[in-house]
Length: 240
Ligand SMILES: [Zn+2]
Image (cartoon, rainbow, N blue to C red; front, side, top):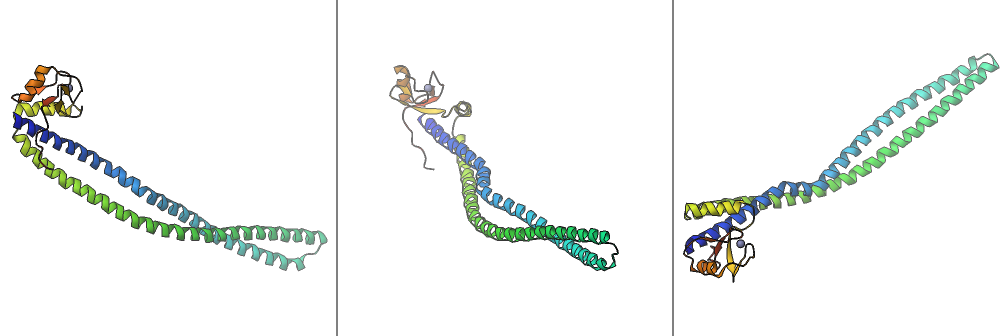
């Protein structure tokens, strides 16, 4: 029975590692996403800046066309001045020219704003793209480290799986079934040592008779309170 208990403790160590590995593997996608987030933030800032830049380029083109149209209009209006016969007509025409000049000035302001916007955004984009390049380089290093760590866990897990199979085959079916029921109940350890008079699983004091029987190691005994399988002292655990 002593050997069976030792095997069970070894199996439990493997199950704990299996649980831990599973947790760690589960966390990887989230960790990877967290590591990549600053990168995605810069990428989306670049996209926004590019969209703004396109808009400004469009505005500039429209502004240039508008300016050309208004300049041509002013030239034509000026040419017609000499054709006008009455004073009234002449004044109305001058007003029309003044209005066209106002429009021209507004269009020039808009054009200037678009050009300044283009300069500003181009400078911003240069900075952000350089930043993205640096971030991408840093992230590719982190990504590789994480991928390697994950690969290591997967390959170790395969070894643990093989050890688990080999060890479980040496344990009696009934004992294995009881152990698995306990372990899978999610209350932590299924097989625990006694410490003096106490069950180290639930920390209740056990009857001296039970402790004596546990120390004899002649049969499988369980704690009356938490039902965990008890053993006297830590059996040899195979090196991982
Ligand atoms: Zn207990």
